[in-house]
Length: 223
Image 1 (cartoon, one colour):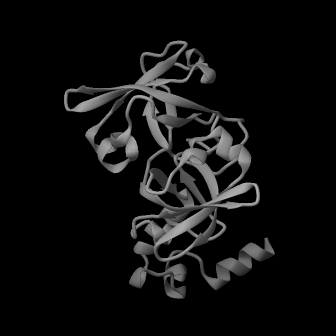
Image 2: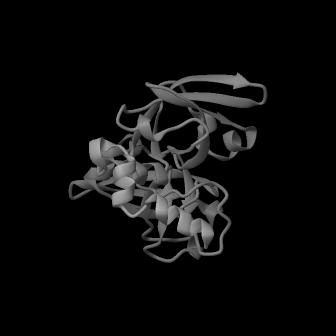
C-alpha cells in the first residue's frame, strides 16, 4: 500500500528481455535503496514492483507481459525518469490517499497550461475509468496523489504546484505523453458493490434487504 507522496525520482538504467518478460534496472541512490529488504514493494511511477538485486545505487524488478501491456512500462528505455515511493509502514503519515500500485489504465496528456505558479494538466482517459474519477476526488497519476479539478466525459484535469513539478516527473510531461493512472480505491469498490444491487443501483428495498432498515437506523441513533 502507498500514499502517492513521491519520496524520490530515479532513472531507468536498463531494460533487459528475459524469457518473454523483461528485467528493469532502476538507478535511485537518493532513495538509499540499500536500506530496503530484498523482495520489498516499491511503486515506480505508480506501478507496484518487487525490488530485487538491491545495492547502494538501485534495484532491479521483474516485469511481466501483463504489466507491460496495461501500463507505460513497455515505453520505458534507458534514461527514462520515474517516480519512486516505498510501501507505507504502519504509523507513517498518510499525506496523499490510499494507493495500491495496481494500475487501472493509461491516460494521455491532452493539454498543459500555466496557472500563476502552478501548471494545469488535462488528461484523456479510457472511458471505462472515467466514472471513477470525480471533481475534488483523488487520482494517482504516475504514482502521484493528485486532487481532480475537473472531470467530464472524455478526461480530467489536475493542478500541480511548483514543488510537485520539481520533485516528480510530472513537470517534464509533454502533450501526447502517456502516464499510469490508478483511480480511487473507495470509488472502485463502491462501483463493484452497486453492480450487485438491483438494476445496478442502490434502492431502498436493497438497503432494507441488506440490513439497513429504518428501524435499524433509529435503534442506532438511540444507542
